[in-house]
Length: 276
Image (tube, rainbow, N blue to C red):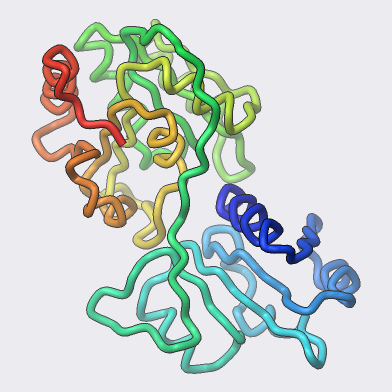
């Protein structure tokens, strides 16, 4: 959500529109007071963060003459249709094209971008990299075990969140693979991308069957792997459906993680690896 908001703000400001970030705290009185002098109020809605707030509550921030734009980061197409029909917001933004449903005119598709970063010339090391929030369904343990079996290094750059214990996940990874390098310190976006660029490949092996796995939304973490310009491996699950049109640049894990890693290693050796 933060990556998307920053990228959107940078592009909008580039067109001459002034951006005024508001929050935290995400409190009604605070937001209402801070948005008195704006024309458009834009909210980033993620159900995992704001599930305790009804969508109707967001409309209370609106004053006469103002418009509200709501970006939905992890909502189903059915939900988008219902909210659009209720006309709660002046405009709604989603990341993906509609499937069997046709979005109403008030819904606009703005894909999650890939923010590029400066990449110096580095020596690629014999290790696999990943990054992002360490939720249990992200498959970090599977990658730790696979890299141990294949005798590859493993770099996991974990972001901290009040919704998941990064230090606990670090211990779980190191227990399975003591040689792994697990970083939980806060890193700038560019630093994450540069560290991933020194890896043989980056892996995002999300587990769609895991209880608690979000059924909708897309992955921002994988975009850091894409920005690193190294081979990217992703599981064939809902969070990566927006990458399907780039199968000539992305490896989808369909024949087991170990075998897919071996395939990438062979492709690299032959100089035929897929890279975004």
